[in-house]
Image (cartoon, rainbow over all chains, first blue to last red; front, top):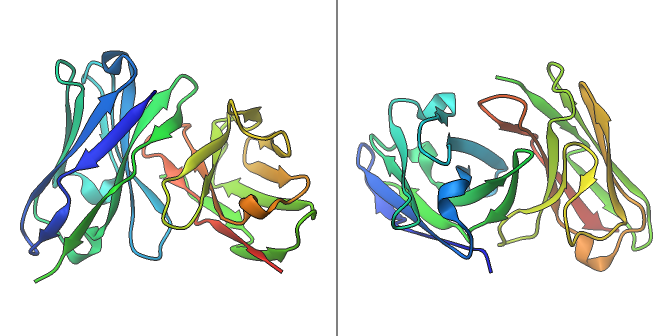
Length: 118
Length: 107
């Protein structure tokens, strides 16, 4: 069974940092591209970042470039999102998602909430 | 970035109704579009990919169509479990972009 379990969310101060993790199981993690998607309270979904299976291709949403860094550890089947210089508008639930062939996000984690507030 | 305009933003419908949601891209995206369902407090769920391909396990009352800039999600006969918010997502190029969502409510 495919499972994606996010962790690392919590309360951060403006300008602070958090590192989110996504533990993957039930599939060959090293063969799949991965994404992060977020959802602010009461708002719609917002795509955050993509990383290819081997980590060589990485993309970010414009508002996160230079502040967020996506990475992965294919030995430990984990995906990460390092978030620096956090802003109030980064407050959201952050989901990791597996990208299947055809560029669809076919499995999602349950999400980890991030609150940026002083 | 490609903008995705979804309509309507919300609708009220009854069980058994036929429901149509549209998504328009600001430029041509071939058929690189998916539809996702999100129930309150839950993670999104993939319904349709490549504009019209039904994801495994998704009921056949869901269907998708379109290419280029105009796309449609249709629910042929609305069921109680279908009351949720629906999003389109273009995966034609990065940054991927979602539509703003369509909330389907009970009439």
